[in-house]
Length: 106
Image 1 (tube, rainbow, N blue to C red):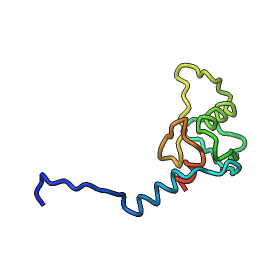
Image 2: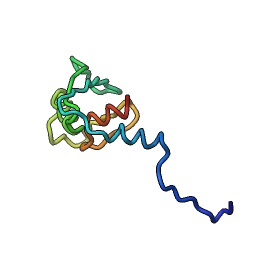
Image 3: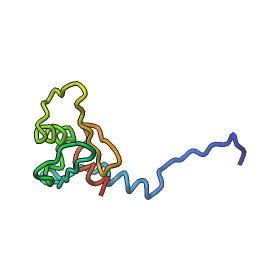
């Protein structure tokens, strides 16, 4: 095969197709997901670390809830940031569904 030759994939490999099906499957609306918060650095500790939330809720709702638990106002003071990571590896968008994040990270 020459360096100028390209291969056109007409379909995804089976393992990728299966992973996409799992990640994009709509969650049942009545399911709940358990979330465990862990503070890092100089972040304040929560009295209770484990909470349950609907799997259809957006990640922005989790961030707003955490801000309320920590006593941070909604607008946020200059220099006051809240960084939320899933499994200490990535920070999802605020519009990501909690159920999808749970399926991808578990």
